[in-house]
Image (tube, rainbow, N blue to C red; front, side, top):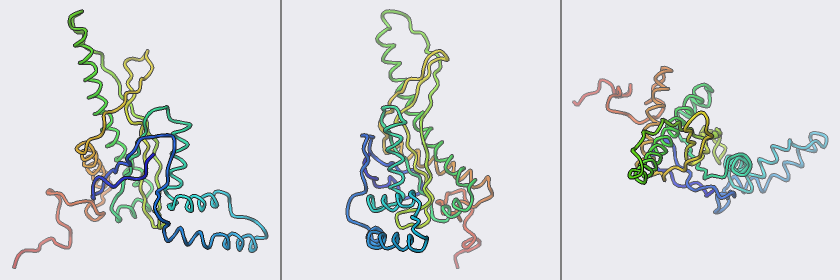
Length: 265
């Protein structure tokens, strides 16, 4: 997979981690970050001091692996995510294209999600539903186009027969990261999607994978808008103020408390 691309929007929304699976994952590249340089300089001394203070007992292996991922990739969150993605692509997913979507939210909402596990799940679910709806829309368009082409080839041979309804399903695995490269709190889900849909034509047939049409800028913006709308509904259902949590103001929103009742003098 390719490194993380620039976000498609400066607002809250799902950002496309551009690139298709090649079976190999690359780090961010570029120079070393200050945090990476600091850990590289002090990690050996820290490990030795820990062993001395704990009677020769070492740090847990998973902690050491996180430090090694930081030194290799420059970003602990990216290192963990990259290892998970490599395992899924190489050993779990079928041999199809894979695309990653990342949801970033305003800082006030990040804090609320960090302190409320149920809210974090609901916001993530809203994001996943918006992306999944996009795959099903594009899958239906591709399926309709194929059916029209097939009917055109058979028109002279036999009268057209309506196609039975089909079922479209998506495949995805989500992982929620809680920190950014500077170890600051930043709750954000990474979701790996099979880049297409599974088509099931009847209960007696196995699902067949249908590759999705490429995402256009308009479609990404539609997913972005849909995710915002779904997240707003989640917040309002929980009696939370979307504006106070950093979401953009809409025309039908009440103005923030600080500006209510103000008029021109």
